[in-house]
Amino acid sequence: MTNKPGFYELVFLFILLSACGRVENDVTHYEEETEAVPTIISAPQPEPESLGEFSREDILTRLQSKLDNKEDLWVHVLVPLCDNEHQGIVPVSQSLGDGSNPKSNLYWGALYGVKTHLKKHKDWTLVESIQQPNMDDVILERVVFRKETDGQSIYIVADAYRGDQMKDCLSDYLNALAGKSKASLHVHDTDIGILGNADLIVFNGHNGLMDVEMDIIPNQDDSYRDAMAIACASHGYFTGHLEYTGGYPLLMTTNLLAPEAYVLENVISTWAEGKDGKSIADAAGKAYHEYQNCGYKGARRLFTTGW
Image (cartoon, rainbow, N blue to C red; front, side, top):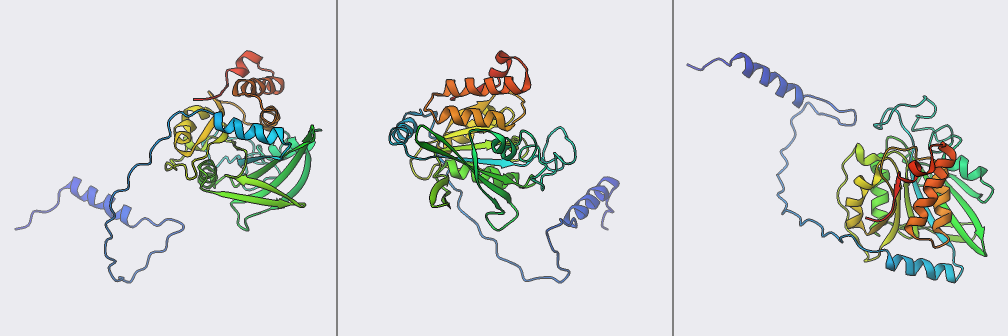
């Protein structure tokens, strides 16, 4: 005679059946039984090898050469739009936290958003604005700014990623630092290096690594690149990835802060003068104190450079 299932066994069975029957929004289930698909067993892949805490010497040599020869400098900034619904943030107003609307977004179209702040800044000229540059809705807008100094042009290409596409934004950032993703942008008879072809690659916005896990991406081309992550407590979250990608942590943060564009502008201008990491962190602290009025010493402690 077969024993009847007990109470806890019935509860467990109910949970199991419920889990198996759950339907996600983007998944279609068929009622008809389909032909079984053979299981493919893959050999375990080796862990990528860390580059360790490398120096910035090679990067500085390359940058100084461009400065000496008055070659254009290229900065690519990746901005995940502020999103109340899809990011682990303290909610802001509905318009500031709408991750699908660059025009009003806190990190893009608001007063100290990347596009608005640079557009109003006397030293920067808006060269072009491109809607959905990749013909999809991951990057909603791309802006190109130029600054002329001592006969040299500095270009900033900034991309506004949908707030609910954080993983895509982080993936593009890490792949660019690893030299896995490289591209050029042709604007007004000028070619501008973006992604892994940029001289400086910046992540600016909410620290998405607090919300999602990302695979380690190893360096692909034996080249190191300057990296900045202007996001809350980025040093503790990003440097572990940078040791593999080959991104040097030129500017990281130590605690919570507002990742607004006045810091971005000041550190890029300082970087373009060939200054060292300490000078760049000093510039970040100065800008943060100027706009937040929080005291220079406290503001300076929010920023760090190197490993």
